[in-house]
Image 1: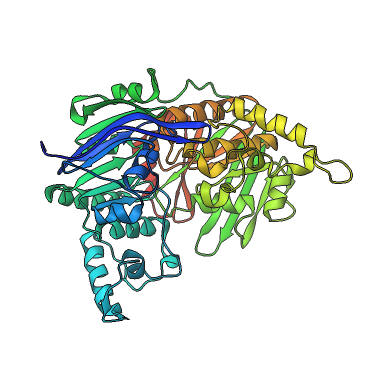
Image 2: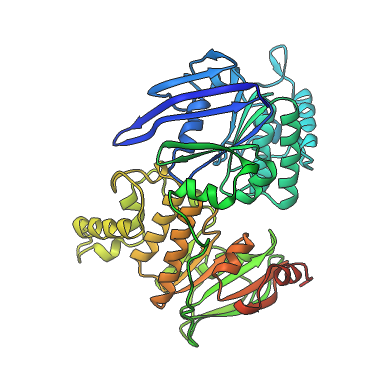
Length: 497
């Protein structure tokens, strides 16, 4: 643990209009898991992209095993034994698992590809991860969690000296997380230095040796993980004390039913799902992965078909079953996959905010009043404290927390009455989480209603006025806030529907 493997000294990185990193220091030792912490936008991913060769530093020095190095691209980093598992997948969906693992490093027999040898090598790596996936399976047929594990397998195949994990457990089940931790401990024993970026501070207590904290592109400090408290780490990250993880919530629930779902069915997915949503209510949906929570949300929003059942809004049955009908009826959906389904990453913050609302700013000839739209987008950006150099910045260049706020801004611009938050804080730091929680409370106080799906039990318990628990496409339990605890939720989550 005393052997220093890598040192980054006074690393500075500038983008147009933004000082992303300002003299940041970072060190990793052989055989340690070093957590890199900070709010979204703190500069963690930028620093690691410099270390993996994706970005080039403007100032500073990188020393590997005592020798200064220059990383002028990802291949240069790979050749030096530095690999990164990105938060966003970098897989080719039309290729097999084995082809993705060894892409650019294919097994050959002379000039010909040796698929048998490559599949065998991939199978050994998958076995070490305790994964029951065939090497010749096409990646497009895998679940999100399985694709995440393939990303991990790809990084392990490089036999790295330094392995960077950027939110590696965000889409994994508990058993998959344990498998990942098992492999992480194995790599530690082999002397591999692991940089671990995660917003799940509780899981870091299990796996991390040290932690370096960043804030606003600067270095705050490095601590031994076991010698510091969760509150101390949070204070270092946000620059202030958070007395509570959740803001104080005063219920705004009324007797008025704004949404009524009756006997929603879809073969093999949903089975007679029925519930009411009240004005001013945060209705939490809990359950294990695959329980059907997201499928209910997508059915209500018209993104997935249903076989039978009815959806009634403010006493009127929803006539059609399409996304356009749901939006026009006042339903907004914040998808769990914000990058693929929630945002146009190649468009600006302003355009994404106004995307569902352009008819509102058009005259009778269909000409857009750009000035009015820009003013409203600016007001929403300020209200939600979206960190961006300007409204013309591409959404894809912002942090996960700020991207989530853009999606919220889009639906606020539409003045939507019912908002479905699917995993609202996945991949978001503790400070940004608190801001989103405050916003959700503000919305229900204004008379809006929220359906919230979350895999984090503390979040479900801390925010919900009422909780519905699902298993195998059925609602197996309903809990009022005063009766809800983790034991009751898990009891219903384990019931057969």
